[in-house]
Amino acid sequence: MAFIGFLFYLYVIHCVWVAHEVYSSPSIVVQYHDQNGVGIMDDFREAYYWLNKNTEYNARIMSWWDYGYQIAAMANRTVLVDNNTWNNTHISQVGQAMAMDEDRAYEIIKKLDVDYVLVIFGGAIGYSGDDINKFLWMVRIGGSTNPEIVERDYFNARGDYRVDKDGGHGLLNCVLYRLSFYNFDRYASEPRAPLGFDKVRRQEVGIKNIKLKYFTEAYTSQHWVVRIFKVKHPFNRK
Image (cartoon, rainbow, N blue to C red; front, side, top):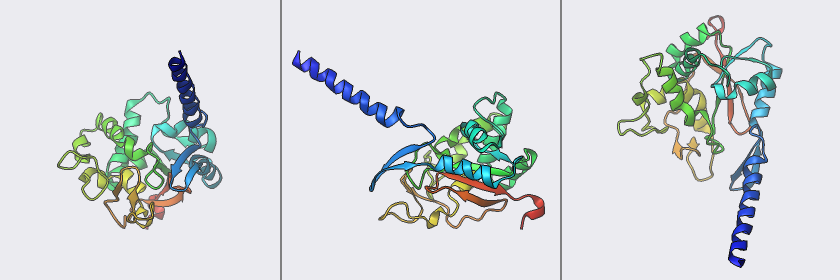
């Protein structure tokens, strides 16, 4: 009886720990652990506040559908897709724009009349729920309506999904990769790691000194989790 009672005690302790770590924090504010202890990542709220205060009221934001409701509600800006988008072709266009190189993606972005592109990047802080980890779903959905996008192009010759110099040609040259890792090769994420070390994938960024042709960095949150880029329209593209 004492042993059974001890098991029940451990179960209660485990449930309390799970409730504290997982269920007690809203997804908009994330708790993280690093060498300095426990910290709070409030980058989403910061970025949505920036969007609300620094962009035009009718600005159109392109991001993956996961963040559509949050941007619409907290930044009060128009999004292309959200959790209630049922048109697979429309979602596919966003996936294609993220998965293509800049020149081809820009044609889609112009057609969709996009003003800003928002990406989620966790490599600086170790946030694993970022767009790089979700990217293969963008590729699959984008490729479902566009045969030019083939999933194997985003893996290397050994079939590995990597973000370092051994990454697949399609991945290293796509818009999502270039926006996520823009200027990251100058960032020190860990004391003894090389500059541009991705803490989620545990790899050094494969493309250094990224130059953007159709985008300019507008805002990067404190922990680099939310990155917002303004689209250069033809009249101001230099």
